[in-house]
Image (cartoon, rainbow, N blue to C red):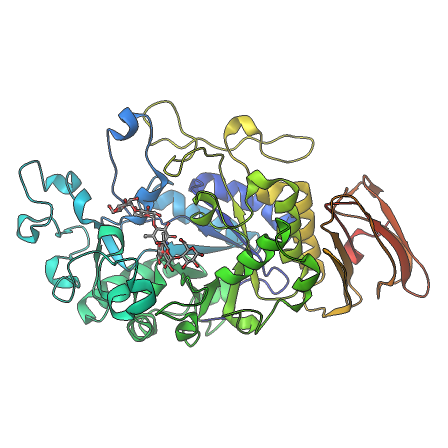
Length: 496
Ligand code: AAO
């Protein structure tokens, strides 16, 4: 399950958080396929809770997507026909769909009110017999939960002290399903197999930390291979588990590596700390297996700078789109440094934690589409979508990532808040995180002689470089001067 089911030179995920299926289909065709993005992580597609009167009826929080009501493909992002069309159109241009699957739980126990008309005022929210825990759309009831083992919330101290409670109790009140039951497994397998039949490539298992690895192993063993007409014969779905483990936790990320990859929160934390100038960026050339706690082998990790949760922490402990050049440096490094499978975050602008995606003034459920600047391909701020994945520096480093696939990091230089390395024969990357001094290199690039376009300060447009040009001599050497808080990146795909 740890092998990405992507095209071999497109080992890069973009999380199009809260995008609609129709917009993702167009994005695969119009943009992603051209910049080396291999897969889209989509928001949970199943039927979810909804509110009619949230924020006076003016908004619907994004996190309703993490409260399943049934496994019908009907959500704020679109219906089953639209989902299917998206999967088909993205696959056709070599971009895979990774589905965020919420298997740990159903809705919040306190929020069952209003779902299928159950729990109207007067009922106790915690009274399972009142139908609060009944989900006729999928066929789950109170007996399919962990209520017998634990019918209260996970406590903060459980994260350090009790793996049992983390897995058996409720994650912020969410009705906790029993994945050990063959009946529950069967319902989930039906859902996952349905998605596979439609052509998806794999799954992000939400709240993986809160499920037992052995239950997950049995659950996924009953899931079909991905479609052979798209992926070739005998391919397992690609699966990664959301497990937050930065040390000191009762649940370890390493418990999950037999059954797929895990989300490596250490990576974004380490790179962000450097990008925010709280550690020496030059030290990150050691980033890989064994760096800090829990950075395991390349094949076990999905790396990212920020995700949809921690970009909303106050203040975020990672770099996010609001951090400008620090964010570009962090994401740029992730895309250039050969470790793990990277995932680029793509957001909408937000001011408050719960704020939902851009939508019509009413009904709130109608998410609006990104609009694009025709000259530089970025998303227009007025549409509400940030689209970090389209920022010139990030999209061009995504191309760098693609072009340098499989090439080792060599000629590594660790400077003071600066670093540089070649991707043997394919590219050269240098980063300067100082405020006032240039980072000057006279260095072996490992590249063939020629004039290259720095794809951070510009890009090749009709074979004209809009940024700095770097000349590599016949000995492979070049003089490179990296400006403060900037990057120079050249690769064989952007030679003039
Ligand atoms: C909503 C409401 C709640 C209400 C609930 C039920 O906000 O007030 O009680 O409905 O009615 C999302 C939202 C939630 C939302 C939920 C359901 O974030 O606000 O609740 O949808 O609508 C833990 C889990 C992790 C989870 C994360 C948010 O382990 O799985 O919390 N992430 C996923 C999704 C997320 C989603 C869910 C799961 C639920 O990505 O979007 O929730 O489907 C420590 C622990 C972590 C723990 C965090 C936060 O982490 O180690 O396991 O994550 O705390 O509790 C440093 C530390 C690290 C710490 C981290 C973050 O890095 O080193 O240990 O900071 O603080």
